[in-house]
Length: 454
Image (cartoon, rainbow, N blue to C red; front, top):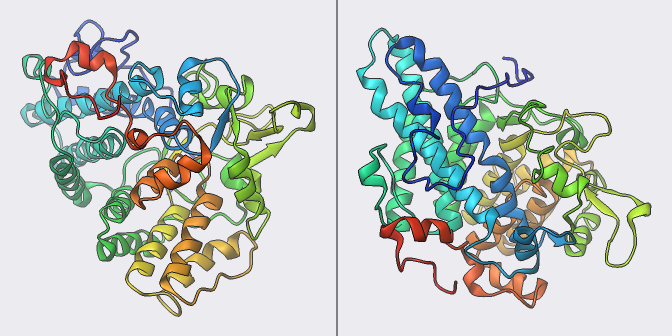
């Protein structure tokens, strides 16, 4: 299986360049309506378009997970990032609108495939099953990100414009059930070994289910699906942690958003590399630097770089090293959605909650796999609470700037405690992002449905 194939240059099928209502897409802008799914030859380009839409969710998801939390300090001029950095978030925030729009772009694209595909003849049965599974998996993934970011959200399952132009929010519980159904339906029909980890696979769904059940506190199922990924032997930990920072498509990647120089989010005006490096709109927070530099190994510190020439005033001189920061090199501009290191942490946490603290098949065993890779001493813990604390610290060391931090704080009920200490502007309302103001104004179903506190 080749995990190193660079994603081809995609035809952009899902561009909504203006701020049109994503729940009521205009056919002139949503070009998928121009590329009708009429025969078997159309299937490939339409699936390509689905992945193009998914790639648009990558940077906004990373921004949500890290910029909302205590990972960054704002030092630039863009309003949306100043609001996130200073914890003065408003419903008009452009970053908040961007994530919502890109999630629904992808959901709409998946619904298009699921609606049209059954009527197309001449498609081999195996391909039909795989394309259907891909659409369901990526739709479920978008709802997973959405519900954990915004809470209750419109459940859009059709491309019908009359239905979608006036649709209210569905409860979190119903959305969660819908995600589980999509994931489980997709699992049997995706390949073990896709052409590249830029495409959906059975392992990607298993990793997604492991994360899903971790968030739902179903520890046995989280452990089960994490074990399925680990024992599949389709993925191996890289030997040096710095490879994860500097390289795309490593042997550890399970699902990765691949970009070319033409659509690289790192080099766009508001892309990750420009925000972290070019403009330095945000910098690593001192609190996270303290955590990284207290790690039992220096390897994970390679997530950030220090440039003494930048050290002045409130600027600590540090730069996030991921997303295209290798000099004269664009081989680390991809965004990883799932990788094996996270799966080991999921299984460790699930095992710890089940009382499997030490010995074979324990949380300690999983944690020390990552400690060994980082050239750090083995972790030991005598109690469940001690082990859980070690795991949560390890998630900072291992997953910094991969978009997990805010979601981790929320799912472990620590967000208000940690964030109130980080910023005097933090309010409990910020446990959820607001529904974008533009959506409330354009969709009557969302009138008077803003999240509390905004």
